[in-house]
Image (cartoon, rainbow, N blue to C red; front, side, top):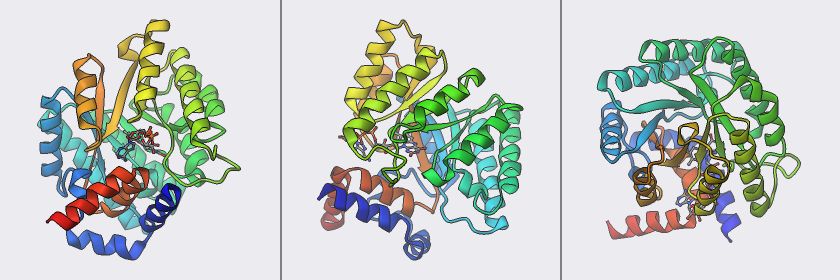
Length: 306
Ligand code: FDA
């Protein structure tokens, strides 16, 4: 049943008609629990509130289904506006983005040009770090290739490694000498068993494996999870291997396990909240519903009690 629900919401997340309609609706159906607002002003206000609780942030201007050069360039402009707003407001925050938003499906060159524009602006605006979110398997190899290229000229860029992929350990090894800053996650997309572990227990085991591998390589890890077992495992690694807290951080999504976020910050860990904003919230919201039946219950309750 849970798997069926997951597939259903992942299927809905790809519906372009609903996506286009949702842009006109404003944040609905409880989406505001997971999306901080539609405008940059609302997003910066959300980040300030989180900073006051001892949490640092990463802002993501939401965007799906980019098919034209104009849309890709506009998306990059939004990223630059976000960087400028982060710098001018003085918040403790960096940027996350998706390369398909910057035109990766239109042309690799267009995407790289937009990435360079963004990274130049990030440098100019206080050397802000820019994280390339990892999308589905079809974009995995090209994302890593572009990262390799960008790392030759920039030190303020990193990406994400997904534990569900069989190739994740090899990817960490092949990039270790470049000292990449990786966000490590379990993986959010529906992938074939030819490329990804189909069983959750195997994903969890491999997740532990890549966290250890990356940290013991001496490289910076952003461990992005809401899973208490994984968080406990990282704390255990920290003790066993004397890993300095400056070498890793925890990350969670806006609106999810908010008390745990504050608790980890109070324990002295760097805790970063992923804060999405913008009117293109529909696909992101559907993927969060796919992740957790508890979220579906929350949304249904909200729909029927208003
Ligand atoms: P798991 O799914 O096992 O959940 C553990 C527990 O956490 C659950 O039992 C539940 O209590 C709670 N929980 C988890 N998800 C929840 C939710 N949505 N709502 C409420 N409770 C929830 N993926 C990807 O493929 N590419 C990427 O770039 C990123 N980026 C990213 C950034 C950040 C900051 C986070 C936190 C996650 C991602 N992800 C991602 C998503 C990631 O791959 C994964 O799908 C989710 O984090 C869920 O996995 P968990 O590690 O939380 O564990």
